[in-house]
Image 1 (spheres, chains in turn orange, green):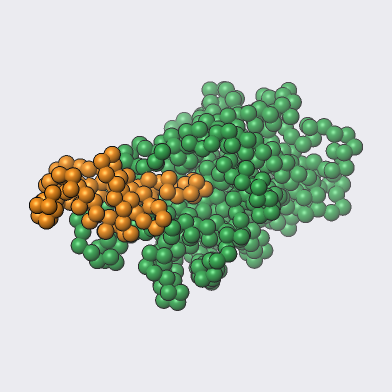
Image 2 (image 1 turned 90 degrees about the vertical axis):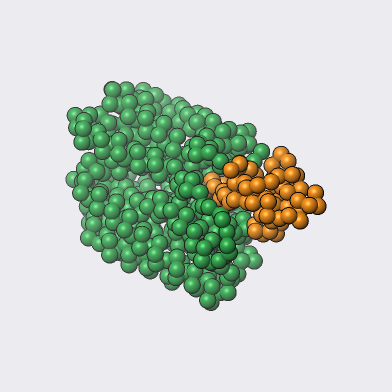
Length: 90
Length: 500
């Protein structure tokens, strides 16, 4: 299974994930997953992928970073063949 | 530029936790060269007890300062101070560069913080503030300077003074404090100091192995009990009586009951809360940590003057953030040793009460990675209850494991190794080790005191009414009494060794 890696960040009460191909945003993480799925399908991705979100710690103010240098990384699998609507509309 | 953790080695040169480990191990390594007869640490300057009228009548830097070893006795004390400044400024600025701080601002800020720290350290050693009317190592400074009065605070006077100066800057001189904030890094400074305290633990083990192991195990047990008791109680109160949502209640519970800011970030990350939650909670934690730091050491010293180790361990469980805990432990150590000396003439060895506070806290710090990992699984499967194929990477434990703790343990184990396998080298190792865990470590602590004051601004409490009330109730009604009880159960009867 191929792996797709994204940088995860948080601004103005919204989550963002991005790589050099796309940027997605949503109000919560599960919605962000959905948006990402749509975006990947629209870019022509098919099949199963391992998705890795790496949180950008620069989101935290400078004074806080000295206490803990890590927020979270998130790994999950995504199936891009399930949603036929997107495939046909492409 | 973004800062992400993908590989296990990322952050090794870019975050303060790793830098505390590197800097601490570097100083430790320098001290260890005494095994081969090399004294490359004795140049560091340390303050002397002095008296105002005596100094004014005939000023001399040698009345205020001296080098740490006789090998450098010909070095002028002021020159030694400048060398100390250059070494610490250069090394920490290199660290600041790799941590991507603004190097120019850091260097300027550090310079001011360094000399303000030394001002507080020297003034705090004025005899009317520090001298105790008792004979220690053949000297009674109180009588030597013919004092008619004195606060008799020991080394605690310097700590308190540094804290007051920092708080004045942080709360009343906002423009000035902004200029210093780039260099005011209490966690970095204190974590480096704690690594050096590993040497003290090693030396304590050489002196009283059974006692030290008991202290370490009791600290682990107490920390474990604290996790299981504090967190659920605070979470329940937050949800039931203050109507907090699950995420806020969980983040606040970890912040109050585990290890402060680092726990609140780790927990929020584990449950994937929006970052605004740990940011708000962390502001609260820092301010309350300052309150604890000011209130608890004198309170414990006066309420339980005959329970030094219990008081130290209770401090480790109650005071949040490593910086504030170590600072509170250091003040407690100085106040209790001074009070006991003044009252009984018996001199408890310094550093044992502080070590009790640090050891308990270290265990709490170690478990935070595992706690967050477990919490992440519980949250995903039981609390959110959503179907998900998400996997919690085990690397999360590694990324959240405090690296300075590994360095602290490494230093301790190296001293244990010397004790068990090379007993002939113990005295030589102690020579350099005493300087590094003495003046080097105390300087890092002093820098912490000043820095923690600079970054604490009580104005930030404004608008946090409900959370502030919950924090105050949880801390003073739940955490502090239970922590004391747990500390008493595991540590009562333990006393520091007496210096003959």
